[in-house]
Image 1 (spheres, rainbow, N blue to C red):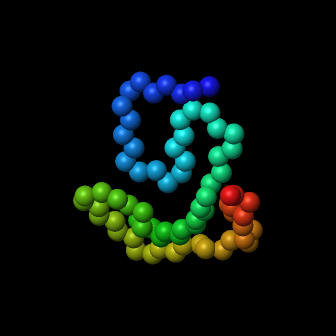
Image 2: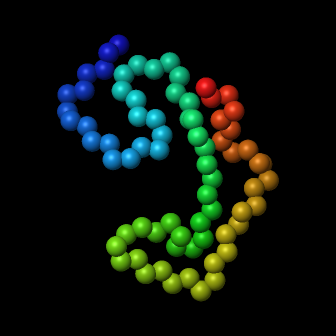
Length: 72
């Protein structure tokens, strides 16, 4: 079935798949993992973070979280 878009669309950023209409398969093309300590992911104009002690656990026993080996 065709997709009819009536309103204007504004996409500022997309880190995934943006799709309109019919699809058979949508697969992720990239995967990633990031570690961030206390207050490390804050964004804004006037951020004030006070962290006396901060530790980030990076232990990952399962090794593969989001495997994309079969994506073409």
